[in-house]
Image (cartoon, rainbow, N blue to C red; front, side, top):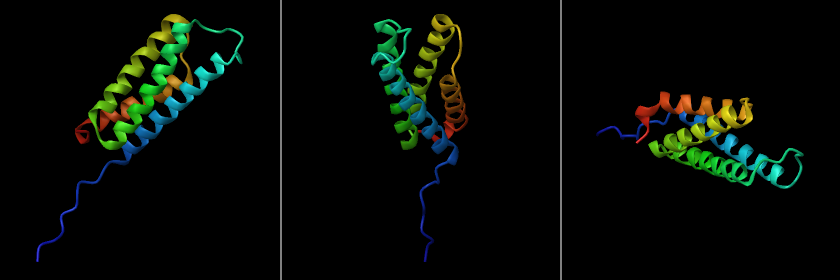
Length: 117
């Protein structure tokens, strides 16, 4: 009798990268809502708010696709990294902890690139 064949086991690293992407995306969306709601005195322009909400949505999508094991998730994560990096360095002149979460998630997903399909 042949032994049962199990599908390859997913890496815990991808689960961590997915969770970090979800957390970063949700925090980016909440920060956008806080700024748009008038809780912050120095309100940025409408374009920055749209970009921030778009990055949050892209990061949530990245978390979903990475959890599913798709390379498209890493590409969404890369796009969020690029937009957040340009905004942090050029516009704000500083880098936030949220950007650090995105970098860590990107590094973990690229490390496990071979497991993504």
